[in-house]
Length: 248
Image (cartoon, rainbow, N blue to C red):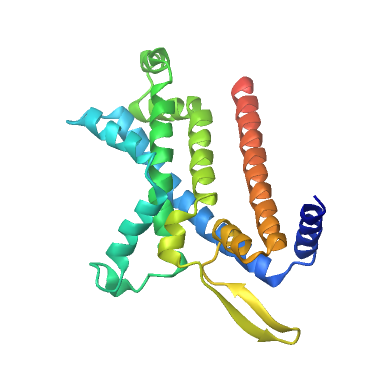
């Protein structure tokens, strides 16, 4: 128990002193995962709207594929992305292996089907009577779509949050394509370790295996804080939307 308390105390000191290694690792995590979620949401939400408001062949089959994509094993996604972008792969000329950009691509693939599937479910859950009433009152197709999106906003926000939760805690894909790389630089205070492609989620098992429990705990605390902030933001948006809907 004393060992655990000592590890927590040292972890708090690392956080409060803005340790360069901890800060750089957190920055890489935030940049990669936030970019992946934003890009996935920007692509998935309009596609979900088009999917729900248009009829086309094999629609049911495509929905099954989308739902299947929600359970993609991260390490398999990382392997597929690595094979495509490695030096001998079809996209190897881009030189993205072991960069933050390819980590964003891998996490985009993981977040996209989650946000898309949940958004489709949220839009389809809006009662048909709302669409019919709007059409009866003379609303055009665009107005009906916007009305349905407002009604489905809670579910769509939940989908984005689920996608964020998936990528922020993910290890396998970004470890495979990013390489979990850190480097050392000389400063006035001595040698300092900084992250190149190491994230909070990939640093935790590494530091634990090295016996550096305090750093692992510090990274874990930051991940918990990020999760807490995401939930606060979601609850705020839900309350704000609910207030706006009530006033309308």
